[in-house]
Image 1: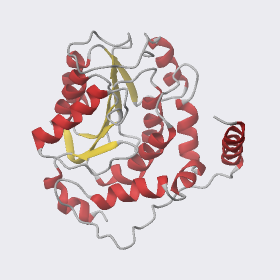
Image 2: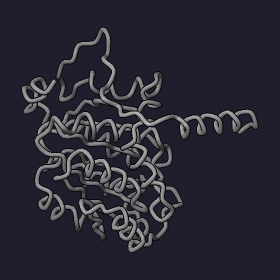
Image 3: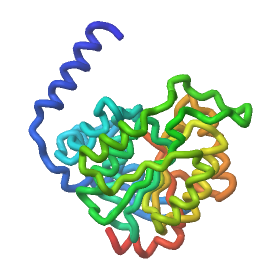
Image 4: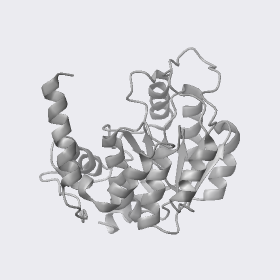
Length: 281
């Protein structure tokens, strides 16, 4: 990066830190686009979340929201520092604050935790907006399991994590709504889903093909009508296994994507939620 670009990024970061907090009350309407539900998704909703963040001012408005700031600061603490880029945190914030409220469940399950920062981010939001909701975050917390197929080329920076430090950070933040579940996803997911009951959002942050397919399938069976399945790694060139897993889910279930940036977002059991979603407008 050139010195000029670094200076520009530094100035932008400084402006964001100095900007006064302001609660984000609503999302901008999408002019000239009808809010309709078809093919198991609502393109209006995906456009409303993504486009004004990438090309407008919504991202800056989110960054001024005090709850977002609190959640992001927690997710960046040294012992849990997340690898999730900020545009994806912004998208998760928008989903949780403005869209989960229309579902009959706000519980969240996360597959793939790394150090646990993204789970802490979402747990902070749940504590603010839906105090009765819970999040379970599943991972080996011991690095990646052995590869079982030749389609995976995972990054080389997934090392064993100090789970006790991760849990201690959550406790220090008072996040009693968050639980980290250690073990292979294939061994822990079924019981975790049953414990949560209906799931409003499934955050799939798994880089390997097999576990990603497994996570998608088991989450689907427990999603609330209209629930959100968020695939975090499928757009990463270093995670072809996750990309193939998304392709398989599309073929298997005949799904259409509601959103493709900064994360791929699907809706689960959308046919059953048309009336609910329209009534919640």
